[in-house]
Length: 376
Image (cartoon, rainbow, N blue to C red; front, side, top):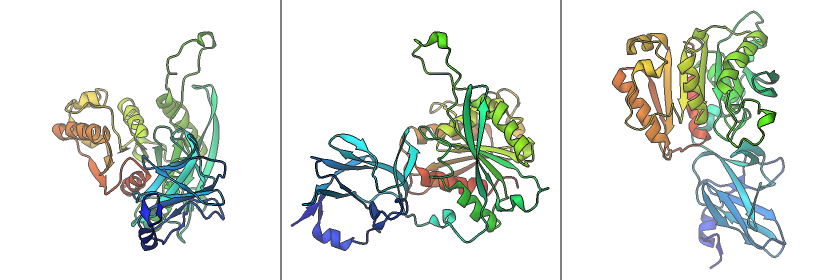
């Protein structure tokens, strides 16, 4: 019986509803996704000796036909967005059929596995906001930087109205394109606002990698450059946004959130700048507290509050989110942080994304839940 990547012909016929992925380049028929969440990739490489589909932490053999076209399928993948690549004779390469996304520290392939609850980030016939690219020079990093800023659909209809601001950070080995592209932050907010489930707000998405300029006289130093992102956020990004956009420039109307590395950055920023934000969101990450370590409120928030009651009064919202399939160390670190909050009586909201791991569907769902609670 003919086998394709370990799948019998009967099995192939039983699950043959493959369709081009929504993340494909225009007009490209591959990669494809079926109703089971299997991914089928194909590439013309007649001179290649071995081609693999690399997705979800597993590599799948692809089979070459008489024309030199390699085709292969994966096992069912979790719902949501996933980075993937092809491996040709030992060399990892992007799939020329997919759009490219910045993740895993590179521009490469990504694919969308349709989720049952995808309606909340779907493109709908509702008023849509605008995402603008904002380029600025950072004196702290001595470099040009950029952020993307989402303004709600109504922003340009009432030029006297001012808006609250959410500062939203990406994860490690990603950049400022993550939330507006993989994260679909603008569509999530468009839909929430259209359904009157969220307050219209501005969202600022900057690059979390910001390093102190290297001393030219010390080029032999092999240590990692010092991150100054927290200073860039407080001293450069926030003042720029407040000057350029119609913001409500006070802590009551300013929130911050991030995923993974961005969640850690969020907590570090809050610890030293409680006067700047009234709401905190941490998606798949928190401050790096070891499991079992319990900290008092003074340590948690830089000694400015005597007890949990003061913290509960000061902050409108402390929000934590995690996928039910997240790998370690994320459940342990988030669990330790929750234990600290519980022991001290600090109020927070905890959300679990069902059936997702450390991936964009977890974070889309987290933003959907978090944004609906802000500035109310």
